[in-house]
Image (tube, rainbow, N blue to C red; front, side, top):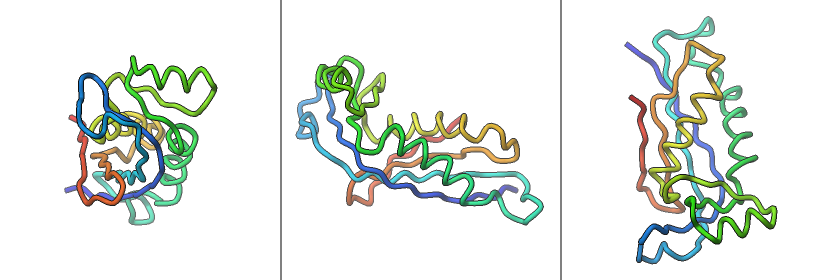
Length: 142
C-alpha cells in the first residue's frame, strides 16, 4: 500500500527543437508549462498525510522560478542558447532537445535531490503539460 499527492506548478519559458527536427517547433516559441509532481510514501506521517503540500511545493517552485521560469530552454549545441547565455540572459541547457519528455525527466532528477532530506517521501513521477493542451508527457523513475 502506498499514498500519493499531486503538486502542480506553472511556469513560462521559450524553447525550440533542434537535432535535425524540421517541424514548426524548430522555431523559438513560448510555452506556459504545467509541471505535475506525484509524490508518494509508504506510510503517512504523524499528521496522517503524505507531506505538507506547502513545504514541498515551495521548495520545488523556488527551484523552478530560479532556473526555468522565463528562461530559454535549449539543447546543448544550440547556438541561440549559447548566445543568450553569453548575454547573461536566463537559460537552461539540456543534453537533449528541450521536449516535454526531457523536461519531465530533468525535473524528476532535480525534485529527487530537493526532497532527499525527507526520507519518508519519494518522487513517483513527473508530468509536463505544454501551454493549453491536455497532453501530458510523463517521466517515471525506476
